[in-house]
Amino acid sequence: MSVFEKLLSRIVPLLDRENIPYMVIGGQAVIVHGEPRFTKDIDITLGIDTNEAERVYKIAQELSLEPRKGVTKEFVIRNALFSVEEKETNVVVDFIFSFMPYEREAIQRTVTVRLGNTNVRFATAEDTIIHKLFAGRPLDIQDIKGIINTNRNLDTTYVKKWLKEFSMNSERNLVKEYDEIEEEVQGL
Image (cartoon, rainbow, N blue to C red; front, side, top):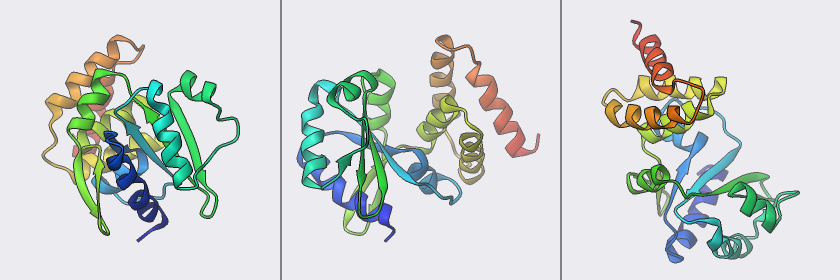
């Protein structure tokens, strides 16, 4: 098992014990749904808001995960992000507090992957695409291409529904961006 898988295998049972809904997103989800690539962190969206952050602080402390420089309780509340590091491996874990209906739905849709003796819930391929397209960095676009190339039965209706909603609060037409990526992957 990789250092990431070992750490996830330690984190997930504690999230489950505390009844904290979650999904692993980011590069780790891309590895599950797309083409293998290097990633340097673990991103976990939590199905709780920052008013329950103490529960996550307790888990981090139990696992000897140290808050990264500048991460205070005020930072967590302001950014809905608790960023910690496992000093032994230098692996960063970002716990992202969720409050949007989309995130809550995505957490309900997760897929379970067995890592060693632990069942870990990952964002679906569709939700990974949505997250990646919203971020929109070049690496994210490459990740989306890999996911589309690897998964021929994507629920594009679901993807476009959320991209359309996110486009309303953005200066970007995310549905059009997705269509262009999909056309490029399919060679149209």
